[in-house]
Length: 181
Image 1: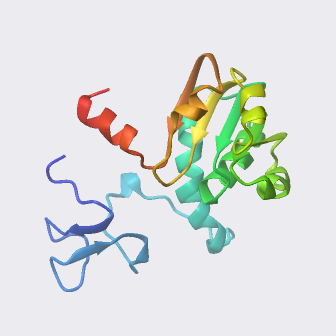
Image 2 (image 1 turned 45 degrees about the vertical axis):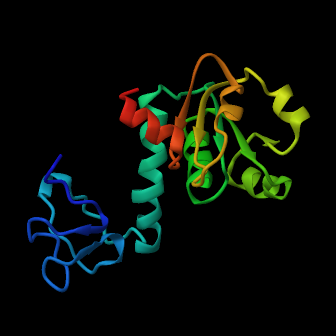
């Protein structure tokens, strides 16, 4: 891991990131090319629209992995917390996997959008009554909120044995990494 080069704004430690000037900072998805071992490359078919490939390869993989890893399948009760770029992809993927999908957002105004993405239900997390009514209802909570927040609020939504997966950076997550949790 010490030779790892992060995707965005890291030093090009080995001269292979194709930065300009040489040995400059990495530019991640904003670069024109990159060097990668072919084992990690995916060929996008010419017939696939490139404007769709980026979201599928980024937010799609980010949400697909925990859905598969934690056994989401037909009938799994999944809550997607945060209905932004990641959240909308999570709703679509969980629905395609035949899960029972509930979108959770602070803003009641997101309900129509969440349902258009495939959510079966919607919870406005700003409603204490709605959150209380949903207590213990989900097998899997995918938390996509990208800013610091009290994630324990969403833990209360889990059924016995359920899991909350943090996909947005949060100090609780960072503390867990450093503690080895």
